[in-house]
Image (cartoon, rainbow, N blue to C red; front, side, top):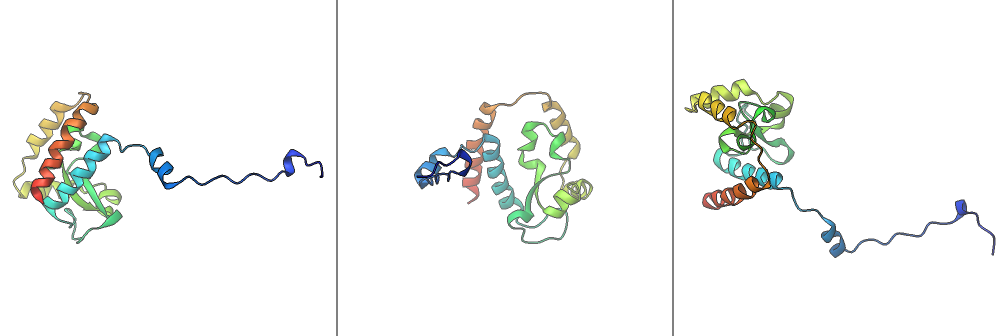
Length: 151
């Protein structure tokens, strides 16, 4: 047998993980993501699959976003980010490329009788408070119950 240097050795093939092993390695879905998924389902049942800020109809897949209106998610307090009064279905163009179309959303919300000043005051009063896993664990069953009532 030839004397092979370490560089010329052939690497051993790695065994593929069985489907059971791959399932065990998956991490659980984070609580905020679970709550956001429920929020999106409820929002779509409440408002349908049409974009709230433009004329796009029957939004599906990656084009169907949960838009935080009329203010962006980045300035909302945690409870307001997951509050159904602050979200509407939006197409990707409105939500991503046009920055959420806050002005158009605000006008439509006001025409529907939403008190934007009260919503903003509520948001401001909740800022600075830390919301941990306990808060998310309390909200998830509430949203599941709300969704079950809508079906």
